[in-house]
Length: 280
Image 1 (cartoon, rainbow, N blue to C red):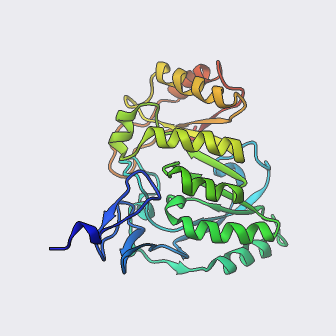
Image 2: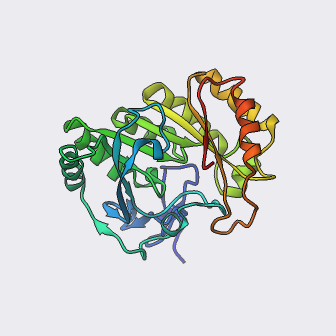
Image 3: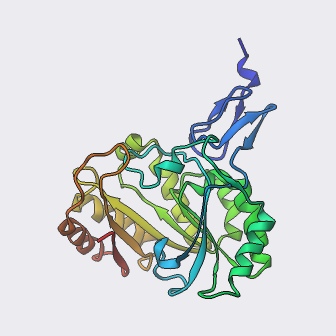
């Protein structure tokens, strides 16, 4: 039996997976290889598209622009309602295309010269932060090309790697999935870590927040009041996207009524200046 001393611990996110040689972590994208934690999805791209920046969603960051959207595989949450589960809940078995940081930066730059143009690269679709090394390498190259780096993330990252990455990030949309730890227990995450990510990121770059509303799970006005009041303590100008859920993946909850979204928007607008509906 392998000894505990031979385990390598991944310090990227609060799961802190302790892995024996050859084991893969909770996120399916990091593992113990030859005694050290390695990124298993480095440069392995499963999705690539040129999208309007508003689709991220980012409403107050270069509106009207387009951005090259890039996804890999894996996630360090297990949301039963995941909208991109085909790649976020997959590992190395999913088909992918190798695009090294230099290639991605060159592709992003080439698109700036074609209609409708390109702002930079948005790392999205799966959870980008679990590919931290690829993010950092590519973001540095994008900055050198005069391009922007955008993250669409669940915010599940420890403080040290986040601080190393933030100087190279221009904008983030961070999912604040609920304002209760029991909801995060259901999704496999940690609310305080996400709150820390929001606080630190809002000091360093443009940040917008998204909360997907699930009927009976996070749809109370009282919870939205607490969430929006906390966000306003950071900055009342933080944009909040309150989005409608539809049945997906392992969740058969009914779609969120449109009236619920409008009701929660009204609650949030008592604290925040910019509140937007999503998926209506």
